Each structure stands twice: as C-alpha cells, then as structure tokens.
Length: 101
Image (tube, rainbow, N blue to C red; front, side):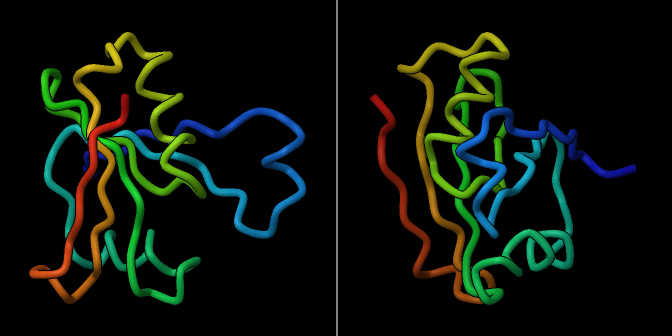
C-alpha cells in the first residue's frame, strides 16, 4: 500500500486551471515511479511539496506550495513546522527548500 492519501482541493480557482491537482499526504516512503507520476504535470521535471517537520508528513502535488500548506494547516499542523520544497526528479543535487511562514 502506498503512503499517499488524496486531498482534493476545493474552490473554483482550482477547477478552472488545467493543472488542478489533488494534493497527496505522504506519511511513508514512496517510490521514484510515484514521484515521477506526480511530476508529470510539470513535464516530469519536478514536484512541489510542503513538509511538516514535526509530524513527519509531506503534502505533495499541488499547483502551488500554498495548496499543500493549506492541506497541512487544515489537518492540524502549525505554520512554524512547515517547509516548502521542490523535488527535481532525477536530479537529487538540485532540490531546494524554503520556510513557509
């Protein structure tokens, strides 16, 4: 079983974009193939995610970091524990992170 839980985004702003994606909550390791699938809307190059460092979960696959941040905040995580990242599929030395505050 995968460590992914689907959390579809609500709201008309997400329904009108061609990249309207369901944010996935990752609570256990996922495969490179699953990561590549999540990166497909970005030409397979990267995927955006927000990590809750205290709860050790990650929200992944939204159009914006704010999409994943919203899902984690709604599930009870405080903003101070959230870090936004871009995972470049196939290029592990080029990943980036930033604090979401």
